[in-house]
Length: 413
Image 1 (cartoon, rainbow, N blue to C red):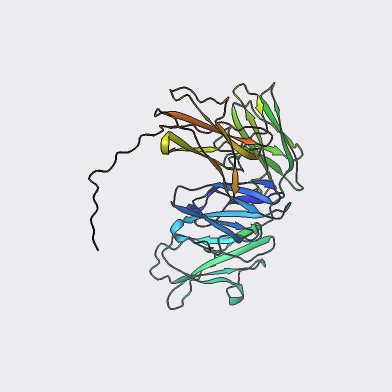
Image 2: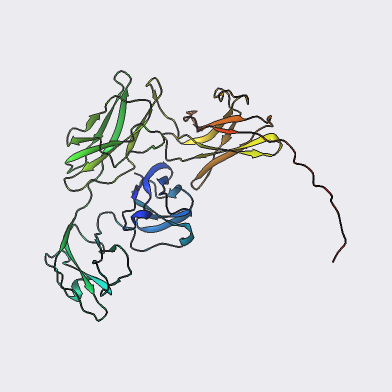
């Protein structure tokens, strides 16, 4: 099973990336991709695997991880300003080493912090009563620095109910008398569903999901992406349906043209497990016929090159499709305003797979200086082709610039 992946649930909400998703490729290679927040920009992304620093990358939104084949891991991604992150930067306390054995305690400062120097956090260690002694001091000396919120984390602890009290401390060492407790029950996430599959009916134009329930499940929750092929992952913020335990199947409403990605999460009455890797996909054409085995569509970039040629570059997110692409096919139109001719490729180029950069490039023949459209499709080794990339229109330039005038040479020292 590939790693679990999810947005970082930290106190720095503005730095959490969106829609972390993974796809197992082969031989322990796993593609992880995410959607960056608008700010900060430019950004760096800190990738943690099981709470440990894996890599810090700049300006990327996907990466290829190498893990032991068949193992399960927790992958988290944090977005920070690029200027503040070198390859060794790794903020402690913002990543969990295990998904279900740490509690984060957060609080806001009082209305006035004039007489507040720091904060102390006490807990009950799961014994039922908070003790205000050093033995029950979870955190001390959390400095008041004007922040709007603060947080500390427990060490790794067993599933149980825990109580916490936060107190303020002034410069003289006086401590507030707060005894109001905040309780949190820590319970392990239930296991995800297994054997999730999708069957599409060309008669009803509906998809039927089936799966095997995990032990202890109360209900299953179904999500999808509304057929939006620009977002090839379920929207886990919008619940589509709830299915009781033991049913193990769900039929969709009538679908429309597009790429439909479905995910199912298990709920045990307390918490919903956060898997993002267990999904199924159905792609439908304009006639609502199913297209299977397709890879993700590429991103196409076209730039001018000398002599009236065009340099075409294709980039592919390997986690976004059903099939794994090996090549990109490039296409063009007649240079006179016609449609791109997808029946005849002008080039088929092997993808170069380096880290998260799956790309290729190609320089065309010389064209006339009229606006020309270009298109692209990614292709698997089995010949399955993606949807069309967003077409690019560019005008070739073969005009030689004018020569400089009045060239002189003067001896000097």
